[in-house]
Length: 202
Image 1 (tube, rainbow, N blue to C red):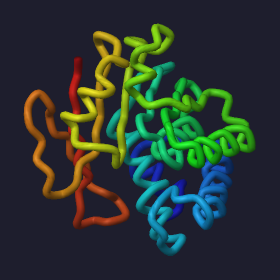
Image 2: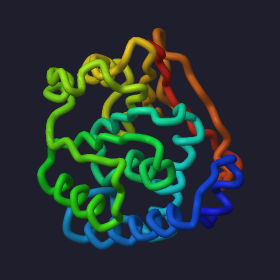
Image 3: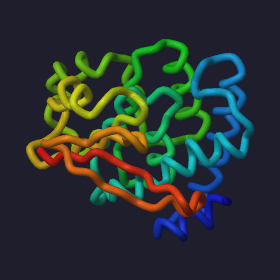
């Protein structure tokens, strides 16, 4: 499914400039993935659906308010945070990633794409949460393919404002337990499947 078609299905508005950035980001992701372990190797079409379109789906599910501050915990290859920053220029996205090779990719991608609303924090999330510049300042924290929801809350919960939300995508069979609530959304490009996210409002 093309980006524009997916955006329409998710009721997201993606400008032409944003579309070009997302496509260039995907090219960079594939180039770097040949030498740096960013995502599991797969055909381009599979990578597109599993990572770029999934990031759009998560953006639709998160629906962050205008000018929200976002922490992408364990950003890895910039998923979903860098895709969110490309599509929503009003968001201020911090890509939290401690692994040096992945940080190098993120810094290169942010610079080449000209994404002014994203910054790379080359730290463990626990370290970031101890910094008063970041602690308690985020409207949304998202952690895709990082750890179970309870562990993410323990490590990243201090980043959130009192009114903030934590979103942790989970697998089809993974349990969502209190204090988290479960959010489900049908996947437009995989009609028989749903995306599940554990959500906590603090």
